[in-house]
Length: 191
Image 1 (cartoon, helix red, strand yellow):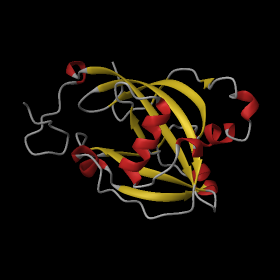
Image 2: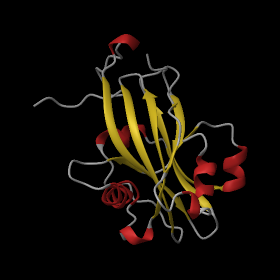
Image 3: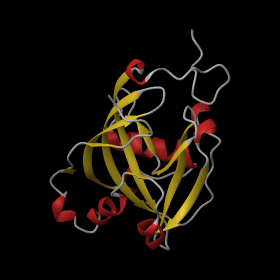
Image 4: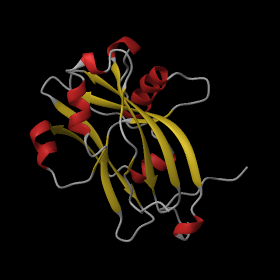
């Protein structure tokens, strides 16, 4: 068994852009809002770049084999934040999209499904973060929506506030999520 190697670990060698492996992945993203309309985001990073690239992203992650998107959203919220929710607490799915994420060590063609959940503000528990998340998550922040709208920081998805707005228009997704056009959000352009 080989030990995973991530950017930022000793001995990691960043492959040439054309040598980065390419993967397909299904994932869920959850827009977590508190009672003050603040959104929870993680500041992720690509440690294989110099300077290190950073972006803000909603909680979420890969859908495991045999798992529904809704089950994955509930699990990912717990793993990434410590928050325990019931599937019925999640609103959506609001949107699906295909995004190409280019990183210093890989390219991921990700099929994403978005949900929203409203909760009381809480302190995020990262004890269930993976080894890679422990290395790459640089900050965690509850963002006021006006601050999020005004930031020059990279936020994935770039149109996160438009995705949130869908939650107030259920007639647009009640019969199935809105399908967004493919996009690319990357620290390193994908080939």
